[in-house]
Image 1 (spheres, one colour):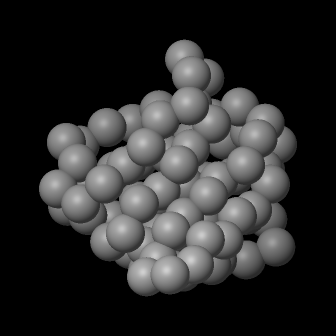
Image 2: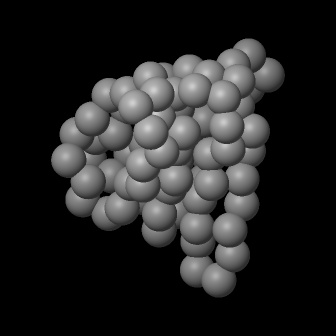
Length: 76
């Protein structure tokens, strides 16, 4: 899957096997072939797992759209 994080400082692109997001209704995980979804995000950590490693990025809030194995996060 492709993870695209858009912030005021620029755009980051990562490949991921799983992405964990701080959803407004509670944290959730996105895996390959996830159903399309749009959600608001609260302050917390976006974490993504690749083969053998895990990375993260702190956000202050934002929104996410998941469609066709592309996860697009607009974050503060």
